Length: 138
Image: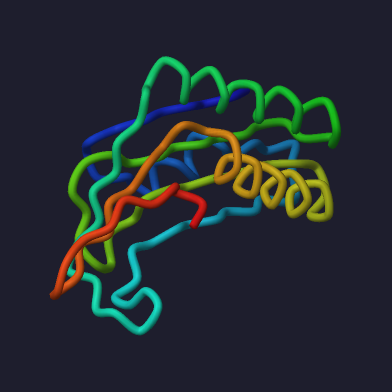
């Protein structure tokens, strides 16, 4: 099972865990990316995420399908938030369920690392003294 989503609404950790949970699996790995309060020693006021949603979902699907081929994984979820986020908000959740922990860890790391490299999502970092557009993987 794959569950892919780009949303302007807050991401729900408990709901994501429930969607991925599988009684045949003993390992679940979850990556939760949050908005930190500093970047390069500059205080972050907020981040603004934008995505080209059709392409982003297509790339997220490729990531999930490849992870399912590489590792014995049952379920994978990738949710990314867009819009204005303040420090502490959740920007991304990747959750993977597998019969054993090693596959869950490996597939989850692959998914988040590849998402940051290939999915067309951009962010604007807004600081107290200015703003800057950067790739979401920066």
